[in-house]
Image (cartoon, rainbow, N blue to C red; front, side, top):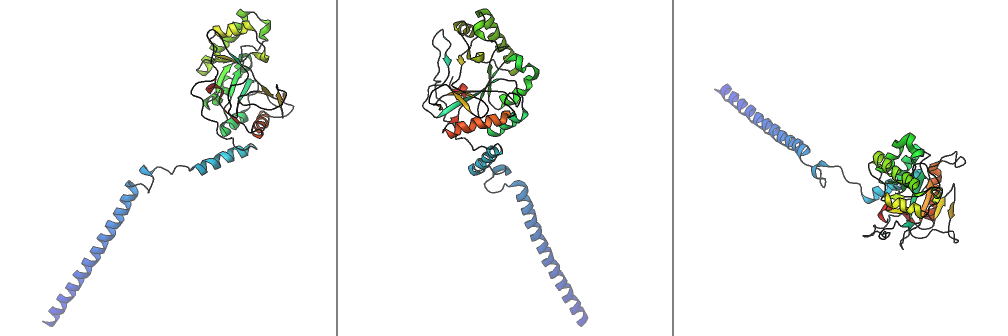
Length: 289
């Protein structure tokens, strides 16, 4: 009988150990399953849906600073919000001619003419800096590569009218001027999906026939300029040789051949430094005209 008692005691101990082990396994399994379930279905704290964390303002500022530093520049201050009503308004039956925009804000407007230089680095630069500008393009100059200007347009920069062939409009009659303006309007509309409504006469030369022709082509305004960017310096029309609020600045799509070895990106960087040094920032022309 002694051996039978001892055998029963062994069996009882084995059952107890087995139950304990099973209990531990069940606990571990539930704990593991809960952990896996949380990682699969629940999001990290503060990030609904498992979305990556948003960049903080500090992170965005650092990215902007790095982009500007790449081109030897410092970031611009953000321009003020555009006015509810555009300050340049046409009188009935008239196309306004503007060289600057009436404003007290320390803003200027950057424009590039013609379209001769098609430097990929300029596209890269503008993609990095996100400085607004307006392009006044001539068909004879851009027709070999319409596509170059599309990435610049996609950045939010407008393509406007600078005639078919870049003539001195004062030497043409009204019918010929109308053809230069209206035909280019149609071409640009076809190529870039939006008909231009601003017009710049080549060389800044125009007469009342130009204005009449522009009106017949639904031009909203004729745009001249107050300063023109050369290679390293600006040419000023005013005697004080300074930028004024609302000034329109003229630059060109030009490269080392026309700029005596300077690239278009270097010329643009020089222009942006002049603007910054005088305490101005850059706004979008089409928000004001």
